[in-house]
Image (cartoon, rainbow, N blue to C red):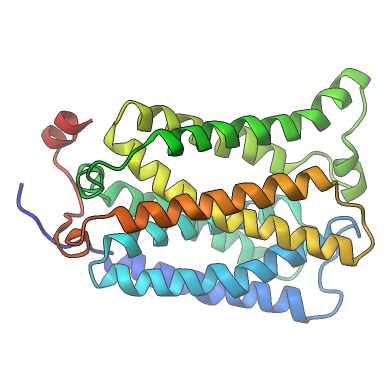
Length: 289
């Protein structure tokens, strides 16, 4: 197979720039326009924390990774995808959870833009080339971390959900937010945790897409973990009680995911940024998986 540089198609460059502009608008208005959000007081610290992390961390990461990805960097391409995954999660939750406001169409536009760009960028990534560029990277710690993350987050949410189901009541966090149900429960238990479980399984079996999912999900886990800690800060500042175990769990998960991500990116071969093809052929993918 002939090597060529990774590339971000021009439509995805334009969609990424649109995402940057719209997300900067959404977070700026949310943070700096007084009383813009119409949500219950219990939910406000969460959206403020999410906006702050998105504005100060996620958007600069998206801009920088897009720049390097367009210059042929495989590392930049992986981080670009991971930040898109974080923004997809963020604006899915905003579209379905936050009270209706003047930016509703911005949230839904960001939802479909991030979804199309993330999926399109993911299927163009050469999983075989990424696996090859990582060489003999030990996978045990990545598999264990992803399995541990699945178990801890599942236990954390099920500890709230199961008692409410058995008692015929509503989980306190849902009731306090004035919501009919929790979009976060749905996204985590229905999408994110199964993705981590599948990623861990594929990586353990040394399948090429296991390396891709692991790299992308680690970026998403690190940024989302920082967002949760920012939410906790705003909740504490507002006088709300934040369970210490949640802070410890999310703090530890963020630290470990960031460390593993850095190790993975640094493990990419020196030529990965200039010699990685954008797509593998079907025969190559089958032989390497």
